[in-house]
Length: 280
Image (cartoon, rainbow, N blue to C red; front, side, top):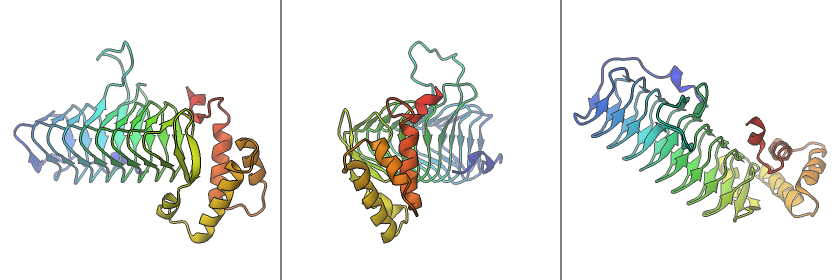
């Protein structure tokens, strides 16, 4: 992921701010940023070159946004975490957004709950209508988050994942890189890289995400290795952890397969299969 604060301009010239928009005098916008009607940009916000805010977009104070992002109407970035009993005077952290992301209508992303914490989004992600990213989440790159996906706080979504419509993601869950979550699933445990998951309480691995493997740029040989590994992990009986340990001992293990076995071992350290819970 990039460090968007390195690419944000401090230029004072503003190319396009609609007269009905409200932009705080301390906000720093690159000279080709476009701000549409009825947008609100808070104090200390920094927005990088090529970014467009369409109508009714709200950017809360101190949010950092990199270049070439597109915000559709009604999206809200950096609002207070949804924590029972908290008021507007609660001390909170920040939201940092990378480059080339698209936020469709009514997407909400909350800032960190900790004064020194960050909710972090990487590069080239697509968040579709009504998606919600909870406080302290980390979203890496090239993710597709479909309509109505809601994720609790402290989740981590690794590069290339695809989450279908109306999926609920439990707090502290990690989705491995290039995985696929089927629509209307409820995800309460970590999902290993490259896997396809569907269902509710529990959701289950159903197979390999072939499209994700292609998007990751892996060749036919690695795809076959991943298919064989998926069968050994999920279809040969025994526990998942035991199968992963057995697979990891094989000589010449494909690096992509190793990523899966390492991910499973990490998730198994928590009794509910959510590795990030260990850092509460």
